Structures are given as C-alpha cells and as structure tokens.
Length: 154
Image (cartoon, rainbow, N blue to C red; front, side, top):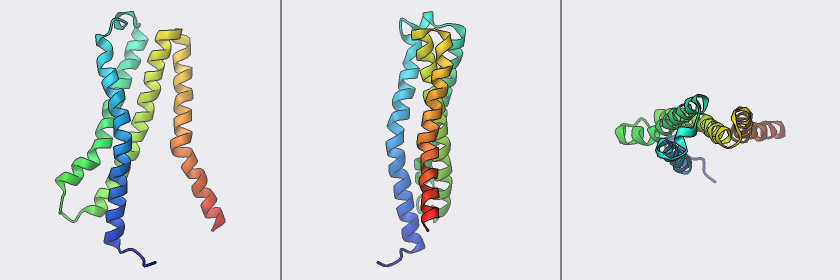
C-alpha cells in the first residue's frame, strides 16, 4: 500500500476531526437546550442557592463546550481554500479536546443539580465527582492506556 502524501494525510485528518465533532455536538446541544429550559419549569423555585449556582456553572460550561466544539467547523469555513489545513487540524484538535473537557464538566455539574434536587444537597457533589472521574477515565485515560500498550508492543 502506498504511503499517503502530507496533503492526503491532512485531508483525512480534517475529515476525521469534523466527523468526530458531528458525534459530540448533538450531546452538548441537547444538554444546553435542557439547561436553557430549566428556569422556566415549575420545579425551578424549589432550587436552593447552591443548586442555582451549580446550574449556572453547568449552563456556562455547556455554552463553552458548544463554542469549542463548533469552532473548528467555523474556522474551516472562514479559512476555506487558504491552504491552512495543517493549522486547522492542529487547532481544531485542541479546541475539540477543550470542548470535551468543558462537556464533561457540564455533565458533572448537571448531575449535581439534578441529584441535589432529588436527593438533597449532600449527594450532588459526590455524584458529580464520580461522573467526572468516570468520563475522565473513559475519554482521556483509556486512550492513554492503549497508546502505552502499543508503544510497549513496538
């Protein structure tokens, strides 16, 4: 099989990045939409100060995650045919990772709000921490494990 050229590699990497973002975006959009509607529900007045602060943190993190995950597509449109594909792939990857971190934090903060509302204030933060640990290991730890296994095998 022939080696791919630098241009072919960059084209492939950009397509892969944009496809991966298409997977992550609906999740953050659904979470963000849910958070935007929460203050307009009948249960909103029952939230205490701590839950409202955590709600706002979750809302802002979902907005930040949306921004980071949408940015590579916007950059692609703005830099179209400018021969900046290598920079786009590099920066797009960084933005996608930042978006995933913000999304994990938004999910954890949202779990905290819901758990506090259902079970009381003492359970929200521990559950949020557990969710954050789970997502951190699954999204960031596991890929490092099999990367290390590959290096060991080589």
